[in-house]
Amino acid sequence: MLRNSFVDDSSTDGTIEEVERLSRADPRVRLIVRRGEKGLSRAVLEGLRRARSRIAVVMDADLQHPPETVPLLVEKVAGGGAEVAVASRYAPGGGVEGWSVFRRIISRGAVLLAWLLIPESRKTSDPVSGFFALNLGRVKPDIVSGRGFKILLEIIYTNPYARVVDVPFTFRGRRRGSSKLGPSTILDYLLQVLQLSSMPRFMAVGALGSLVNLVVYTLAFTATGIHLLSSLLGFEAGLIHNALLHDKVTFRNRSLWRSHSFPRS
Image 1 (cartoon, rainbow, N blue to C red):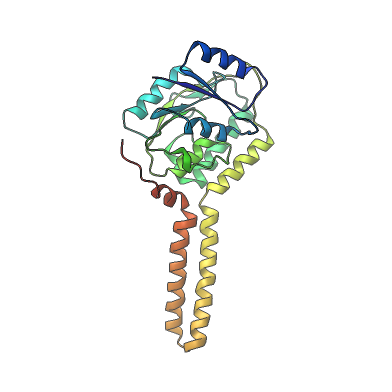
Image 2 (image 1 turned 90 degrees about the vertical axis):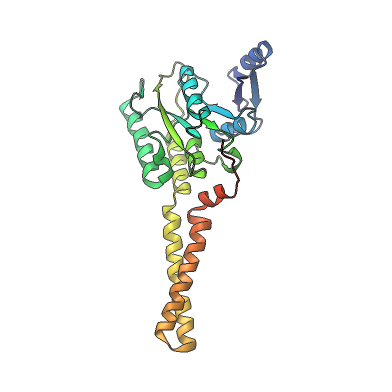
């Protein structure tokens, strides 16, 4: 049975009262109110963790995400062809309504930055979309931290072997309220990308590995006076150091994913 869960961070705009009214008339409608917590990503994770079905769809409730796209997303995931179906503004046939040139540039820039620094994000044309479907039998929300603003980006990152498909849609103009996009949102996104990117960690591990190489070489040469033997020992120590840290630090998302046993659905 299709269920609709609304996650609300104790808003005062009448959302809680309206959803409660709907839930009394229809048991498929459920309200999840988070007290003392804020943040879109963590709100999405709360909804996913409390989902009662194998397939879950994440979308905004302000109708900027068209409900008629939901069956297409569900079909892609339920059919077994993918673990993640992304409603994409940038896939052929997709688009946006009512955006300024500035908003378009910011959005495209966010996509390009993700593609550049997070290889897993290249599986979709819109890794910063907030409209997507998941197979919860294969994509587990409990390994996602929800620290960043764009939850889809972290889901794809923490599930590097998940199959991802795009479904084009047109992002509708806002009828009420105002966009949350601002300097703080942009900064949060930049920090999230840097946290998820393997490039800074790769460089740090490599630099530390060079230091390990030098230290081991120096100790070995001091003890033996044999340059070739000391060089080999230093090289091997640096190699082992880099291999271990790259697995645990640089590519930690793959180690984290492997630590969970997911049955094929």
